Image (tube, rainbow, N blue to C red; front, side, top):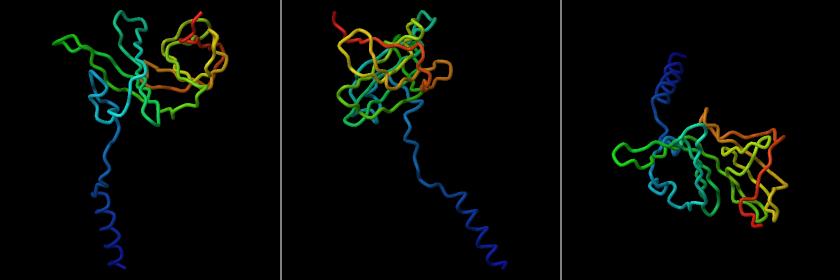
Length: 168
């Protein structure tokens, strides 16, 4: 019995001290001036880049939309300036992965309103349309600059989006 107890205790002790070898593959917290400086983003192409001013005279946050062969990657980032050369430095705060969409769908960022007030923080999957107002919003998220997270919006009441590609 003592021998079994010793073996059991040894297994627990060694398993607690043994690292599994798993590496953190997250890009959260990484900083860049150009997104392709980050190796994990080298296969992505830039679709759009939106700055969020909020109540500030200088942008403090941004939303970067990238795409590769399989996915859309939406990145919420913090914006600071390099004191040496005034270039913008972006720090990744949160990400949202959206599998590539069907042909009649698209992602729009910053072209939605809540109760007739523009909200540059909204990210939506919408159906393509030839009209100014988008009729069908499939999913919607908000880049919350207080929590530094991209959060799903479940209540779509009062939310409408505009077709940024509409030509009158």
